[in-house]
Image (cartoon, rainbow, N blue to C red):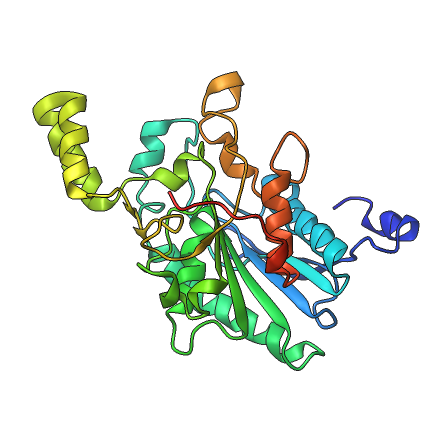
Length: 308
């Protein structure tokens, strides 16, 4: 974030920025934190998703999300810090504006990138727990978009994710497990935000996608709907497992803005998908506040939503 040092001089509550790691391996590696991770009681580690690489978009998007989370969490509990962890290779899309290309991209439909990145994320989280001055710091793992898949995969490694107390999933195409309790922190410590107009949170299950394609070929849109629905009765199975915002998964769903409708107003296919961390009035201040409350270990401040 440009001007961070100047902001600290003007406002002592401004979280200091730390570049904890950077590298040029494949898509690039970077860990950027806001707040000294060894000092605060509350630390969150956010994993970005689809399309992330070490470029201008990372600096202006993912780094800002970590910053916004740190600022909002410190307003609740000053002993809070947040970081973005780009320690794996998220799937990329050659033409993200092309819906057909997006749906056919092999990487984003595969768990491979997530499972390769999971051990590295656990190693990093173990370091955070070990070097923190507090005997038992509160650590929150945050997965956004495809980033929720490596967070989920990390919990399935032997011993789970070191030190993790809470898991936050936003804009998630699922985690790879069918129930919140399978993530190793207790289902009451798994928090989910899913915008009504975020298409990534509505991706069909693999069975539903195949059945829908067969139905479309045999009977057009109506055939696709009928066979797709039969393949996923109840509509709670999506690409990487049960819908985290659904009752069967069993997490705690918090309120978020519905977000802009895709394609309207020239905002592209997934405008709601990028708003979860943004406290601006025209973005999603409700979601940002709820994420910050969990990061600051104050779930009593969260506003809840019903299952879908």
